[in-house]
Length: 234
Image (cartoon, rainbow, N blue to C red; front, side, top):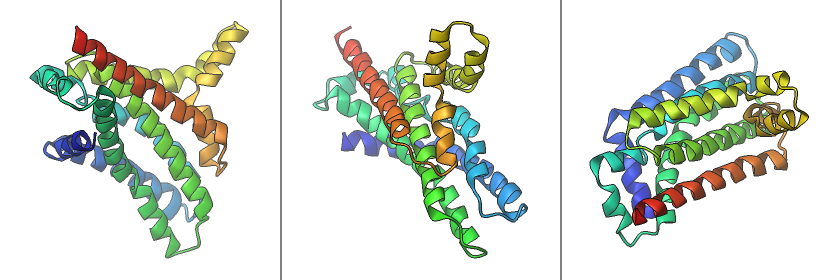
């Protein structure tokens, strides 16, 4: 697993993808930081983290589109599947590499908090709670998009499928308001990433929300494992 993680992590920086993703996250977080914190003269970074929610949703599919599909396209997937590395180890290694790049990208928000500390005392527990929420959100979406990438050898299709899922996750709150079925309303509310993420931006650390994100991540990592296992025997 460690070998896969190192290989995938290096691959992100052997092409422009890793640099572009990190630069995009730094750009948006920097813009929101300047607009709402420096220009607005406030140490409350909750608005910044709230605005990063849609940014993360639409950038993660770009980060993950090559995770599985590239090996299929280059026909190196069979080499991986016949190696002594367990299929779950392959999935975890690729997932860990994407999460590591994502963690580097969102670390910009902690650097901005350090900058704020030179002017006033920020509320660090709230900032760390926001950071944990953003990390859990991105890690969960990475697991989902990785499973989508395992379904196709086209990076474009994997990215588009990720964008569609991201759009659904943004609209699921609105869907809960327009359906008449109480069952569907409850289902959509329970699937709402926004409702689970918002408490973190308010500095509220709730265990059920942490368990929700971790459970979804584990589910889609296992789904990727199952897809790899099926591919091995097909």
